[in-house]
Amino acid sequence: MTVDEKTSLNEWLSGMLPEAMGWLQEMVGINSFTTNRAGVDRVGAITAKCFSELGFSPEFVPSEDPNHGDHLFLSCGNPELRPVILVTHLDTVFSPEEEKKNAFHWLEAPLEGRIYGPGTVDIKGGTILIWMLLRALQKARPEVFEQHHWLVAANASEEVIGAEFGRRTAERAIGGARAVLVFEGGPREGDDFHVVTARKGRALYRLHAEGRSAHAGSAHAAGANAIVTLAGAVQAAARVTDYAKDLTVNVGSIGGGSVVNRVPQEAWADLEMRAFSPEILEAARCQIEALAAAPASPSEARILVNCTGTSPAWPASSSALELLQHWRAAATALGIKIKNVSRGGLSDANYLCTLGPTLDGLGPSGANAHCSERTDDGIKVPEYVEPGSFAPKVALNLLAVCRMLSVEDGHPL
Ligand SMILES: [Zn+2]
Figure 1 (cartoon, rainbow, N blue to C red):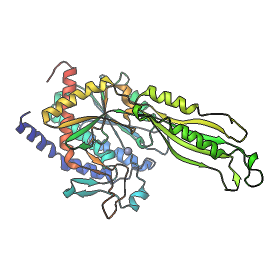
Figure 2: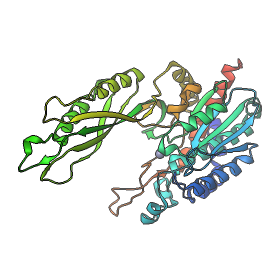
Figure 3: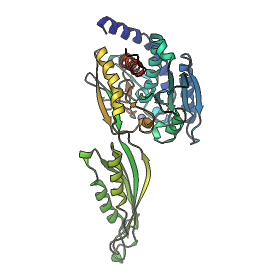
Figure 4: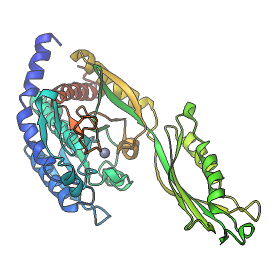
């Protein structure tokens, strides 16, 4: 692309910003904490309205959990074809009380190049970026838009991590997806935009020690101290961490006993473990499960180990790297840089990556997701999005998606 072409593309996309930011402000103004069902549904309704002008039909799918709102699927194009799935979510981690307590709401800070507010980058800004992308595609390459199948998939409860939305999405992409594009925030490192190609999987466990209580003064030897035995198991669990394998075990909370003059009969600890490789995660799970043990002596407690949840890994794959080549080519054409990164945090990509080649982090730049506090000294600031990142990220995704579809359809650009 010539400098003039790049400038006019950027100006054209920037011209959409006032309308796009208007939609974003409307979405951010509605509290959509995961369990605020009415709020999540209102954000779903506004999202459906915003995409209806592009010709997308909404489908609201109730969540299994009655405390959660409806998932939203918006589709357009040829339903016979495998869809390009564009993934976002409707919920945030902020309760109405927290937003009120921290006076956390839409706040434009043009001198900082930021807009603060709940969900601005995680992920309502991502929803708006999808809207800008599809609108730009419709106008710039109507034939590409019309010849394919587009499915915008918006999870009602992404922030509580579960498999349900993945199942609902898979039901709408029976033959798989052309691509799964996730619009979580895409930070910038210097001039480089991050694109995510892998995420760790996770397993959660509770370690439970069952000892025997006794009077700490008169019958100490008759007891089996659950806290002491659990402490050994906690140390052993922590030693499973292996940074060289990108494997972490984090004991995150612990409790036990009741009063100090009694040998404690019960104690527990909750831990989570993460790894990119499903095999490494599985091997580590076996090590944690092997901590279950009968008492080795009368003074020891029994250790029980229970798995309390799992999320699959999105491992590094050649299909994601092939997809990334289109983003690299688009970045080169635009004179911008992208950086391939792997993340430890979970997203819908963990559950949707089996549907087709997947990329994440395609949303706008911003930071401090899940933070609502601001301190006078400026050390803590809440979540924000950078409005200046929308036009370049739309341009990047627009060129990359056109390239991906044209190359795969045998009409290389
Ligand atoms: Zn989040």
